[in-house]
Length: 171
Image (cartoon, rainbow, N blue to C red; front, side, top):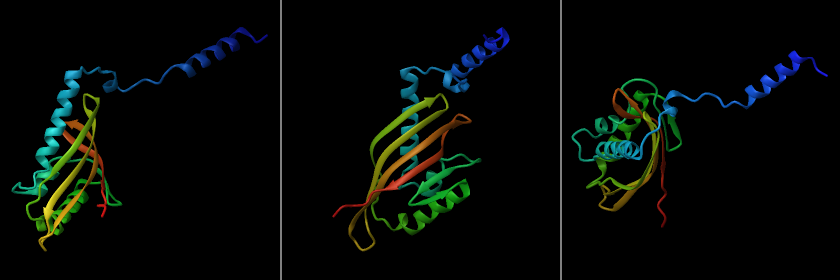
C-alpha cells in the first residue's frame, strides 16, 4: 500500500490533469444574438464601403480596413506579407498595374459569412468578383474568395490577418 502522502499527491495530479485550461477573458463573455448580428453587420458594411472602386483614392479606401500600426498578415496569389507597409505596396501595385486599367469595374459580393468569435474578434469569409472591360475592349472578371480575421482596436474593426484566393475562370 502506498503511503497516504503519495496517494494523495497522485490523486491531486490526476485531478489537475483533467481540469480544463483557463480561457481568455474575452471568451468568457457571452454575446446575445443581436450583439453578434450587429458586429457582423458592422463588418459587412465596413468591407463593402472600403471596396469602392469609384472612390477618389481606391488604395486609401482599401487600406482603411487595416490597423495603422502593428503586424498585418496577408496571403494572396502565393505571396505572404507581414506588415502594413508591404501590404500597402501590394495594393498600390495591384491598383496601378491592373485596377486603373479596368473600364467600368464593379465590385460584386457573393455571400458573406461572419463568425463572431468574441466581442473584439470576428472572421469574415466571402466571395467577390469584379467584372470590367479590358483596355482592349473585352469583358473580363477578376475575383475569388477572401477570408479576413477582424479585431476591434480603438473602437474600429480592422483586418489583422487575411487570405485571398483567386478563382480561375473556366472556359
